[in-house]
Length: 446
Image (cartoon, rainbow, N blue to C red; front, side, top):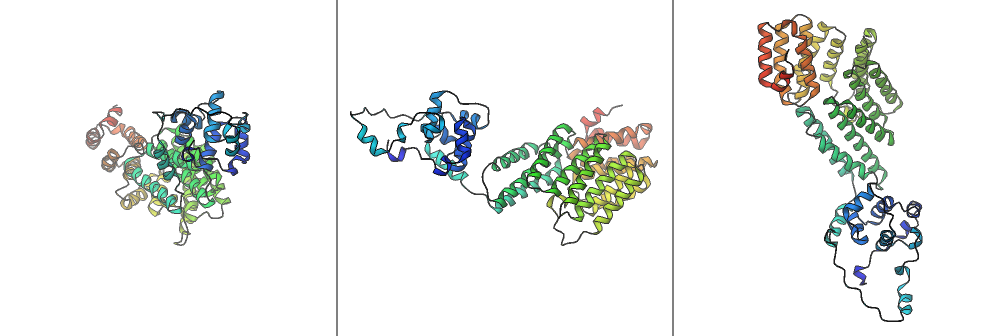
């Protein structure tokens, strides 16, 4: 075999690696292939070509969907990847004999083997080289920053349009980053990747939560917790638990909601770098849980703590990027919602109205969500005309965002409006509702 075509020898450090030795001993080819890729730079398409396997079959092995047991396949892997026979329980392979000895042992001329044509289903060596070059690029701090920028963009688009359409892209990027975690990286890069994967998992969970698909949301929130735990990021673990607590309020599980936010606060207190903004957000989530339970005094105490923590925020506080959304406007509107949940509509109304005046018009879901809350507090006080006017204004942003959570608040207001359904202002609201949101209004027919 010409030198140019001879399979690349595996590095000695890999052949003496205990993980590789054990994987070969039990013929765990999923692990063998992964180690060969990460530590020798031999990629799946190369493995397929060298071992006369199809790329799909190699992919199935790596994914744990197929095992390779046939002896002829094991021998092809040993010869193609240059794994010494004894490591796989085979006899010594011919290529293991030094070239000089092989020449002296030949007693008769050998008929040259016909040149083998590449299998039509396997990529050629030029593609292998391109793949190797592309994946050889090491990750840097700039790469991590690019990932973080894409996450910020996902959040902005989620506010504007809802997360349903974004979810496939987010999940794809999550799985890509999780795959990168399987390779050896410098500690700073590895830690950054874990943080990015955790935020992508939380964002995926959030898109399911916003769609009121709670089981899927919980699964991704749990994955986010596990990823954050790998790097002991207790602030972020607190953030995920706070998301799960909020979901509990929507599932009418206030006891679960309180337990989860209490755990979130415990995580935050155990972290040395927890910022006042994070503590303020967690106190507000606690207020929501107490309000759902009807614990008026505890809810008021938690609201007070949220404002106290917020007052401690300084420009020098290095807040995590995921909590910067919790600004003064968010504090005010959440305070109003907490009072609204307690049935304190007169206190809630001016707070929510003030926050709506401040809120960015690009946050379509937030404006719709908070407008329906304002309308409900107005209706609670008997302000029918104001309530219908507020709810009518909410219909346009509601129609621009795909959010089952927003639709749920619309349905709640519509049901609350039932005793006044024949009043002219209510009829005008319903006409506009049917014009802008016919699918939703169809489901709301009395």
